Amino acid sequence: MRRVTFSVMAVGAALLLGSPAWAVDPSPSTSAATTAAQGKKICKLTDAKVGELSGIVATESGFLAVNTTDNVDNAAESHQKIWQLTSACKVTGKGISFGGGGSNSPNDIVRAKDGTMWIADTGNAKDRPSVALWKLPAALTTPQIFRLTFPEGDKHEVQALLINGDGTPILVTHENDKTAFLYTPTTALSATGAVPLKQAGKIEILTTVTENILGGAGRKGFTGGAVSPDGTRVALRTQADAYEWDVTGGDVLAALKTEPRVTGLPAPAEQYSGAITYSADGTQLITAPRLDKAADKESTALLSYTPTTKRYVAPPTVKAAEGDSWIVKWAKDLSLDQVYMLLAGVGFAGLILVGLGVFGMINGKKKRQKAAAAAKKKAKREREALDGFGDADFALPTDNAQTTVLAPVPGYDDRGRGGYPDQGGGVYGAPQGRPQPGYGPPQPQYGNPPRPNQDPWDPNRY
Image (cartoon, rainbow, N blue to C red):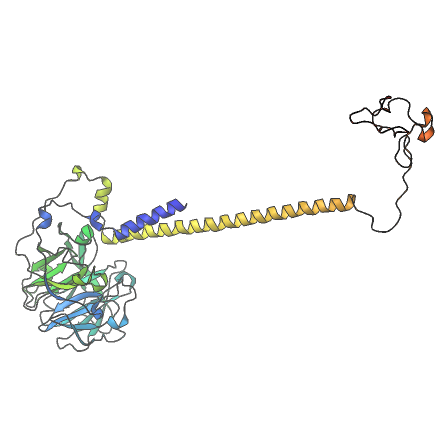
């Protein structure tokens, strides 16, 4: 039991601590894996107020950023504001508070063409009766909340947000799969009640080979969105890549139905990150890392990338027949959520086995203690039985009464000396001849005592 428990725990630890490179999908050729250019450092984030940064948008003077509480341990309530940053990544001011009861878990912030900021408060969407959008005027006054509901039985995680040319929000689901779904409100937003959402389209995730810290899982699922300042382009990102579309006439939904251009966001410069924005002039794509998941203090920089102008071309892959087993192919198709579920399952199984092992050890100890106690009681009973037997059969007199006078034994006098009345001499008479077996030797009547080694019945002994 102990060996099994430790083995399961070791496997779980190896999966948790090891590199997720085994989840790569597809297997890239060496040349294809090195084509993405590294991002250029803008400035380093150091302030814990933006330690769980999940969304960022560039402004004329710097940046606006929001933090998530989705899958964050001990998230500081004081961080749940809209924070202003300088162009040098320094937090300035006291932050902009959300109105009403505050935000739940902001996952993205996007600037619309008219300068309005929209915050997607959609963290843990599957566990909430509704999700929310916050509208922040360009003047950066108090944001206003609008609530939205998914169709019954059709809830999705949402980490990315886009804004249509007419101001309609577009929620992009995070599926960790080959397809992302687009949801829009069925009616105009209302500040007095929740507005139902409807599915308005989908985006197929493309095959890429960009190296990233999450491996194959990092190439699935959109984690952030952005709209260019002039509204002519929109972008969505995964951990590994930025997808970009040209927008005509402000119709973002129509643009998302076309094939995007793909700009790689490769590691090691690109750390764990879900945020993306266009620069204030619209020429660059900018990403921001999560401080709480940074590998070290040197990996917390905002990075800028020049968007590619080339059309997407599927990368070459290594055929499965060249060495991939079925389990490798299965592992490569795992999404990030599935990896987490697998790890959770391994950890849960490990906990069960640990619990069974502890229970077995405790139960075994109790049984050994019980057996020892039973043996002790048995030994005590045996000692008591022996003590009782001695008392009953070998007890000494308890008073001063004289004992009964024993009757004389024939052939012996009252002093224990042998004699034979029927052979003369009476009790004190000397025996005639050897006695029968069982009788002691006669007492000598005269002469010297027998010599050593001499037969006491020898007539010549005297």
